[in-house]
Amino acid sequence: MFFNRKQRISEKYAPVGKIGEGTYGLVYKARNIQNQSGNSEAESFVAVKKFKSFKSGDGISPTAIREIKLLRELKNPYIVDLVDVMLDEADKALYLVFDYAEHDLLEMIRCHHNRSAPHAMPMHTVKSLLWQILHGINYLHKNWIIHRDLKPSNILVTGLDKPPNERGCVKIADFGLARLFQSPLRPLTDVDAVVVTIWYRAPELLLGAKHYTKAIDLWAIGCIFAELVTSKPLFQGQEKERKGDDRNPFQSDQIDKIFRILGKPSVERWPGVIDLPHWSQAQTWQNYPCILHDRVRGLAKGSSGYDLLTKLLEYDPDKRITAEDALKHPFFTEEPRPTHIAFVDPNIDPYKSRPVTPLDPKKDIGWAMSATTSGTNGQTPMTRPMPQSAPLFSSAPPPFKRTRINDR
Ligand SMILES: Nc1ncnc2c1ncn2[C@@H]1O[C@H](COP(=O)(O)OP(=O)(O)OP(=O)(O)O)[C@@H](O)[C@H]1O
Image 1: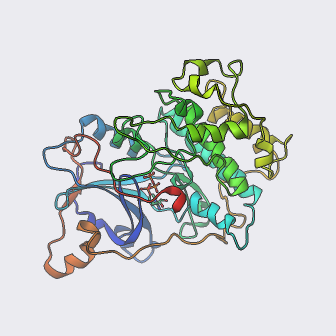
Image 2 (image 1 turned 90 degrees about the horizontal axis):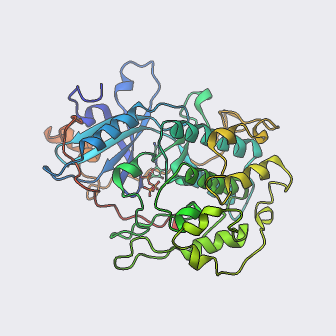
Image 3 (image 1 turned 120 degrees about the vertical axis):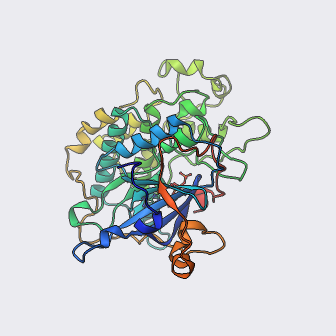
């Protein structure tokens, strides 16, 4: 199924428009043409992620190919489905085709933050989103995959184009790609001024820990939980740019923002902190009282929701709650109970549809323009499913330029 059928991407998916530009490439909305055979099936959409050109001869390693295969085998209701992997011979690009989701948390939160009419996200929605995120991450962690880049734009949510019982459902995106296409501690800014947000980054990484653990995903989930409740990022540090050889500078402002809200960690509370490279510098800073309850007023101090939040935002990664234990927390057995449909009414989607930008012939080359080229001269780019040993990238592909997340 994965490698054995030769087929052009344009035979399976018709581009509709562009929906985004991430670190690795452009993302398009496309119509699934094969689903349209017969009138009975409803129109279905996919998101096609185009990874930038590969040079023939330079290669993706067999290990990376195995990992993409592995990603295709991961199936969970709360993980975005990778439905196809294709190579385009003409524009030398790799296309990953995902199931389409109408929303992401960045846009949903923005809708509640709306300056003219701010309104908090309903607690049923907050709890259902958090519960689904934890289920998806628990599944990934059980499969030994650490997401590493959890943030609101990577948490997708399905809309009304899906059947009623599949609406308002979380689909975690962008997992696994980090390990495939970036070095473990990717610089925060790259040659093309790509900015990676640090707001969801765990304190152990900020203080210089060299290894990713599952606990870093739980920290990010804690930050996202607080943001769902307040419609504002909890720790908004200023990113320090990389200079010269220093690819991962000490993000002192981000750690300062955390200390100012949670208080500075003590060695008694987090014994391992003394082994972290930047602790000697950070420990000299002023101490602050914990004011978390003041920042997350939607969760009363003695409530189960507040208790779960503090367990997710535990400084010591060894003591931080796991996804499995978080799912057993009393917060989820109290009313309102979480459901797999996060909308209050499955027939009403209160969020704006994802903006789709028209295709630009100057930028959207190859398959994205195939809808126009195929009709004229029949020269549609030849695209085929990825062969097992196909060379792609010998090293990480050049990242696309993107806007800062806080500017979006
Ligand atoms: N399966 C999908 N369905 C619908 N939209 C998607 C899908 N996958 C990604 N997107 C959207 O496409 C846009 C770009 O996504 P992408 O993951 O490439 O970048 P990002 O998350 O914005 O940044 P980064 O690459 O740094 O993580 C985002 O708005 C994202 O929500």
